[in-house]
Image 1: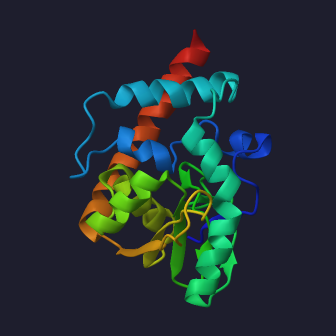
Image 2 (image 1 turned 180 degrees about the horizontal axis):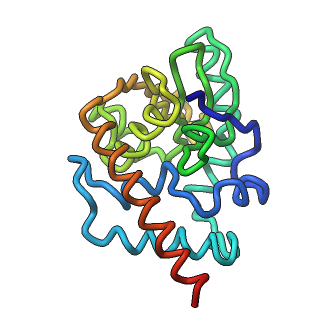
Amino acid sequence: MPIIVYDILQGTEPWHKLKAGIPSGTGFSKIVTLKGDRVKNFKTYLYKVAAEIIAGPKDQGRLSADMLRGIEFEDEARKCYELDEDVDVVCAGFIFADERRRYGVSPDGLVGENGLIEIKCPTLPIHIKYIDEAKLPNDYFQQVQGQLLVSGREWVDFFSYYPDLDTDTDVPNFKLRVYRDEIFIEKLRAELEIFVEELDKLVEKLRAM
């Protein structure tokens, strides 16, 4: 089945409404571990998603300094990536895996026919850490592989960008191309199906009371 792409600005009220009540990219790590096993306290996230179905996305919480930084520099980072890679990035606010709309992801852009981009604009020490370690941080593994699951695409470019604001020397960007981990993706797919089944049962129970 074809994916469904919504060109909608991430972080806006319509975006929050669109993704409310379904498991999505940043929440995948609350469902499965790095090895694809079910998280022991996955019901904590289940209750959060159920609450969104019952009451809507009432409280998005306060944006952290890191999140505000990402919002401020994401467009600049995307343009820099396009220049570095000589590509055009198509923004994709939210993607559903199929017409059921049971789970989805919010990549920072579609690249060509086969790729995605995930942009990070961290503080300088974290950016340097990414460059030094030259690997996908564990914090984003489930999210990135989930993006590949939902989109059906082959790779994600994890792109870390630090603007030249408070240094006299240009700071290099960091790009890492991450490919599909089919074993993990199938484990994630299975756990997501279990999760949405449990979600349906819980919501039905709540509405019957």
